[in-house]
Image (cartoon, rainbow, N blue to C red; front, side):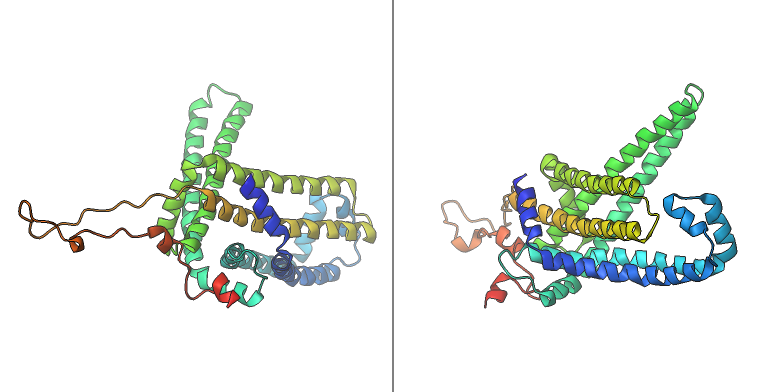
Length: 335
């Protein structure tokens, strides 16, 4: 919990970083929202159907509208999907800059240094994203096959409701597996940054061992952050049920609440990475083990062994924590 509170304090002090990421997210949203609004305004033909859907979704009105104006809406849907892909890429791209910010305590946020760190680490984090996505797909396939087989075996003894609950149990198993993989992915990001690991599989494997040895301090805090995000979303749903969008004032109120939720989500992502950084700093490091050096010729009995033949102990922790020379560090900033 100490690492969680430290990361929260540093996140609250990182307003410029959060506003920068939120501004880019808002700009991407407007790229799709403004053309969508103009198209809907031109296609509704003064119909009251869209206004009636503000109070709740009506599939009949929606299907009639899509049947009449589907050709005009389909290109905008495609733009929205591509913007979603771009948002995922930017989420990966920002990781290096966020981790650099959390490793520069007491240094004022610099947008130039942030963009430099983002561009420097983006290739290795894209590779790590591919590794994480691969493991999630494997986990989904395993639990899907297991759930289908269990449903087939129990279909004769259980009712439809019972089969549904069996499927729900396997779905919860998949959720636990996916969140565990995502948690390992966060610590793999920290490992790639702090120890300059470039291979995604190697970083994921080392992070996996780290998480499994400290499940409460890593996966437990990760689930706590998930519950906090779920609480924010529940508050939004509560506000949406209490404030019915019937006119422009209520629409503007819900728009502000939505933007507050998006801003909180950006802050929660920054907080999660900061928590991983602080937890990683408190975890025990493995002690280096010296390997025996083979000798070409064994010394005779009673002959002293020269000091040059004995391998000198090296401080591997300093090498692992040595920062990348191409990314500005705290000492460079002070000089």
